[in-house]
Length: 343
Ligand code: TLP
Image (cartoon, rainbow, N blue to C red):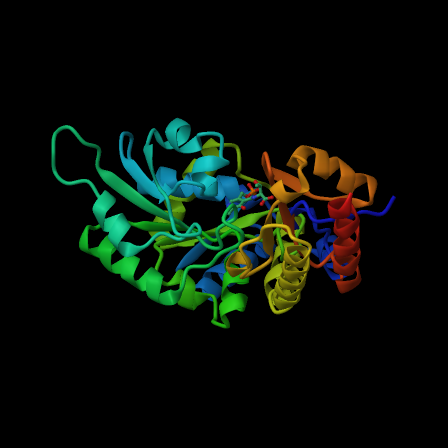
């Protein structure tokens, strides 16, 4: 059975061009830093985001966790958003790997502001931890793909600089944020000391993320990556797809955003509760309370009808658009939902 798969943009398959580039990729041992394709990808990622250097990571989670390990020391506190991936979805990695304590703050639709961050920064007091890092998620996954504005980021940067605290950006979907706001990605990444961004979500590569930052930061990250078993060998076969993700797949993200908007508005018209102001990129959060059914029950009903979605709460479903989802698929999903809602 063919499914319309809206569970995540992680489900995208590599394009034909990616598969060809992977087949033809020049490779070497990347632990010796001898894989030319990996080096090319890392340089490209760094250049696009305006950073000195980049490092290939097996996943976004690894990129985020290693960034926190480099930026902080044991017993530091990390300011993050209460539903951010690094806090909510990374198996308590901050506590376990960095030995740090998270300081979750509730953002406005996932977005933190400079005042609340200023208010959460610890002072000098024997009783309290040092604030070691500020983490910003852009776009914010659980809030429905919401974006930080340049102005918001600039104000947070000012606070961070005044207190000598680094900023790590979980930019798993930073290219979605850039495309949605019509700005080059480096106009968003310039406010962070380090950025993790995924190649394997909407950009379609099969595996991998990049961590970018200052050269010294990246060299420390390389050691932690080795410690965690992420030092890869002939990984150029993966990087070849990653290069195409960055060169060929960014501009088309706007189509996914258009589809998300059409889908979100279509579902809202059916009486489902959706905060359409959060549909800024490719993620839709749907409150299904009005159907009288739990998300779990609806996930199964959708599946029987050839649609895969994820439950993100007892009465919440997440739908994510990506290049494997067409406009016709969107119409189909709206049609099926109409039938489900009407019982
Ligand atoms: N998000 C996945 C799941 O883990 C929930 C998804 O399907 O959306 N930061 C953000 C903002 C993310 O959304 C994700 C993945 C990650 C980091 C981690 O990336 P991976 O899955 O490569 O470890």
